[in-house]
Image (cartoon, rainbow, N blue to C red):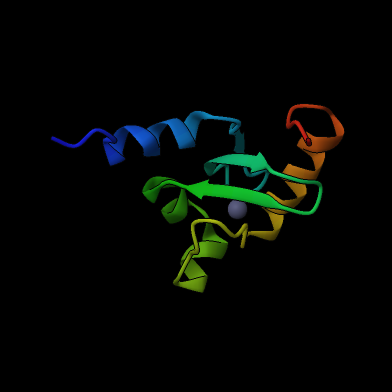
Length: 87
Ligand SMILES: [Zn+2]
């Protein structure tokens, strides 16, 4: 029997420390987490990746890189207003 269920671990990782944010331009909903002032993790769902025109134009979204510039602005705004915690 597996003691560490990979699915459970993944779900905990997704929830722990992540805040839900939507892109100001395309309204794609993503999960964002700051692990340090310089490092940002962005979780795109399949639906949000399809919703963002920048990502669909770009073809290959990387799950951990905020490739949409509008989303980047939204993240900066969330940090400034305290919606997103920076350790
Ligand atoms: Zn976008």
